Amino acid sequence: MKTDNIDRAFTATVVVVGPEERLAEAGDALESLGHIGVKTILISEGDESSPEARVAADVVEISGLAPRYLNNAVASLRLSSLPALVWWRGGSTEALDDLAAVADRLVLDVESPEEEWRLAPGYFEHTAITDLRWTRLTRWRLALAHLFDLPQVSESKFRRLFIEAPDPHAARLFAGWLRARLGWTGVEIDIAKNWDAEEGAPPLTLVKLEAERLRISLELNPGRDCLAATVDGVECSTRIVPLADGSLASLMAEELGVRTRDVAFEQALTAAQEIAG
Image 1 (cartoon, rainbow, N blue to C red):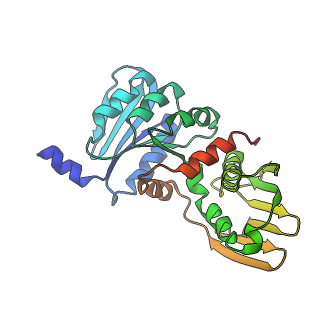
Image 2 (image 1 turned 120 degrees about the horizontal axis):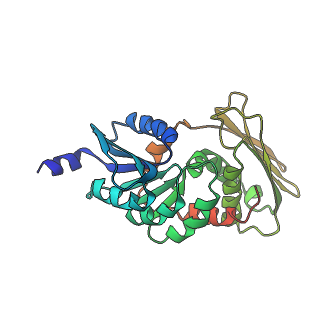
């Protein structure tokens, strides 16, 4: 009876796996989402088979757990009647297979995701998987998608895409989304690293799409809180799109609201791996 009461108080179990220095900020982000009601499990990797678990309120912390025991820890600590989201912030990818098997959703969030991206397609059929970069790109994707409501845009054959980005991996994912959704072949894709971007800057700073008689640009305003989405060609049209809060808490609140498989992300990720960053 006591367990049932606890289960009804929560909406999900969130398991954060990563190095110690990345667990604290994740824990703070989830703590600020207390109104959503999640049980938080923070796990750092090491070589211990049964390290001591520290429990405080609705948070469990385990330090130094050997990767081969991660799935057992998650299976025993998660609330079985509720969804389990695994927030992967880095570690030995040998544990990913087992974690994907016990997670309802797997959210990747690492600085250099090459290995995780290589493994991800193997999880598509049995785990809803995403990358936090995809969530950060939501407003960018919506801004560009809205421009394709214009007939002169939807009917254009684009020949070049240029992206300037602090995070080249995010740029590859954005380019992969376009390539997959539009069925591009033969489109030149250029990605430039923005070395001057401040820490915490949006994932992209500039996107340009070029066709024979039409150009599209998405560009941050000086305050970096809005996008200017411009079509220059048959007619000139600009839309100002506010950017969402890019904090970890906001991003994870969005992820916790998703329950289904994201096929658009899967297609974008597959295409992104064929694009040089």
